[in-house]
Each structure stands twice: as C-alpha cells, then as structure tokens.
Length: 168
Image (cartoon, rainbow, N blue to C red; front, side):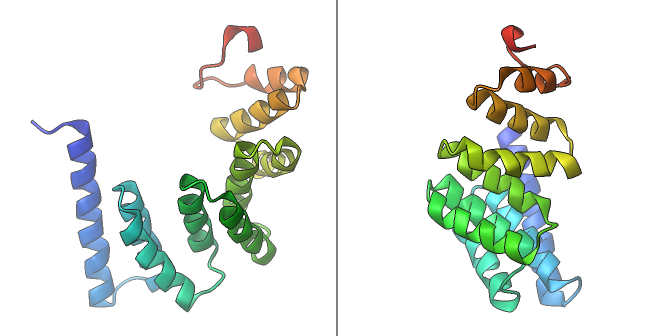
C-alpha cells in the first residue's frame, strides 16, 4: 500500500513525464510547459530541476510573471529574501496586474517583519482575490501592527481557517 507521500510523488512523476513529452513533441505552449515542469519539480521537492526550467523560460521571456514569481519562491524558501524581493519588484513593475507577485512580496516582507510594507501588498491581493488564505494574511498583518479590531473583523469572516478563540 502506498503512503500519501508516495502517491503524491507518483502523481508529480506522471506530470513531469507528461510535460517532458510535450516539450519533445512540440505540443503546447512552450512557456506554459516550462512553468508546469518547474512547478511539478518544485512540488516534488526537486528545486534544482525546477530551476533549470525557470532559467530556460526566463532566457526566452526575461519578464515572464509566473517564472519570476516561482523563482522568488525558491529564494524565499532558502531565506534569500533580498533576491526574492528584487524578482517580485521586477515582476510587479512589468506586470502590475499580476496579483500573485504582490501576494509573494507580502510574504517576503512579513517574514522580514516589515509589516508596514506587507500591508499594502496583502490589501491589494484581497481586493482582487478575496480567498480565505489571502484574508488571513491581511488579518495577521493587521495583528502584527497591533490593529486588533481590523484583524478581528477579518478573522470573524474566516470559515475554514482555525482562528484562536480570543481573536474571533
């Protein structure tokens, strides 16, 4: 019997084979295939392999928003926050409507405890994508800034994310 981890690894391996065959057959959009390959390798825990595909995509399309954002995630996971921030600022300058870059930038600032910089990033994301996890990030930032009432107002709206009783 396969464990959950083994099943997930098998699933990602199948996806990697599928996207690799798409590259060699010439089917599909090459940027989309390269992004899918990099995301599959990242999900499989293989950052080095993911980086190969991101680098190739950035060679072809130097300002590709998903490639810049995904590469910033790798830097963020390695605690290279300055590199992650630089990529995300580049992405947001070239693609001001690409909200995932602002979402990741908010995370970078939050991890560096730069809550005043994180706040407008998360506010912008919630305006265009009010998913619970995005609203949670905004509420956590309000809380970090000691803006408890604003945090509490958002926390009360969350249904699937556990919020400590004192904050609801």
